[in-house]
Image 1 (cartoon, rainbow, N blue to C red):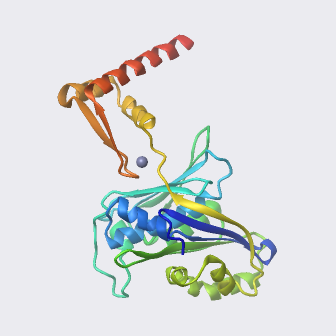
Image 2 (image 1 turned 60 degrees about the vertical axis):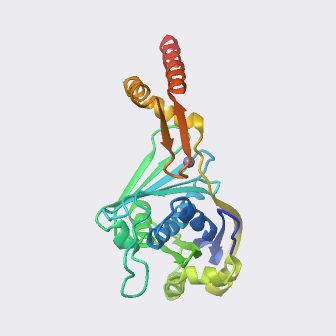
Image 3 (image 1 turned 90 degrees about the vertical axis):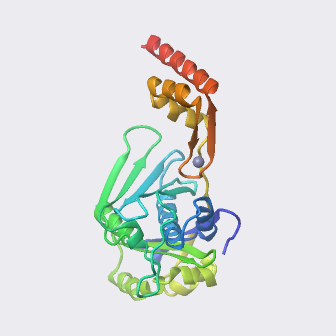
Length: 305
Ligand SMILES: [Zn+2]
């Protein structure tokens, strides 16, 4: 397990010469960091842990540097919506509306992630590219347990039969977290599909495997006889890309009258990033200057037309 703060690792591999492709990741330290940032309950730590793994595996599949996927689960549960953003560089950020929500364990002893997120809603995936319209895909939630919902997304939205297992083992801290995504390519043989179905049970305890073995050892143990070929090992990290200039743009987008109101009524404002909980403070004078600069730029753009 990689316990360096906020770091994780992902393996990309193929089976049987490309009949199936596999993503396998250890995101333990990323889940721990998310738990710390959001002071999350055990149930919400598990929800975020699973989501981090799912979106990391989806994000590394994007083509260009500036591409991003934004995944949102909005199931109407007490924890509120959960949103994660991931890119092809392996960077992930995540937020959940009510990270403190804790539920009783399910009868099988597992954390009730589906109960916290809710099952009555959708998983939305937005793919945004450096330019142009983003692509939006939606599926109705299957269980709110995250893995099944992502598997359904791949099947419905991308017509790709996908086995997705995600797991986060939480004690006092996050003990292990990660996931595996196996996608059958169109040329996939019946033999391989049968073999994967037999082995799917093993992945039911993916977090246990991650707590005990390296990713390479898991490949060895889980895919023996299926010609696993590791194509790449890449680093992952929980990182937020927020910055003061970006927050300034958000403030400007509120419009002049709202900003004037902030200046008049509270002589400034404080903005907290939902993803990393960093605070950005602006005094009344700073807002005044920001507004002036914003208006000036607007004027320049008008002249350009
Ligand atoms: Zn941030």
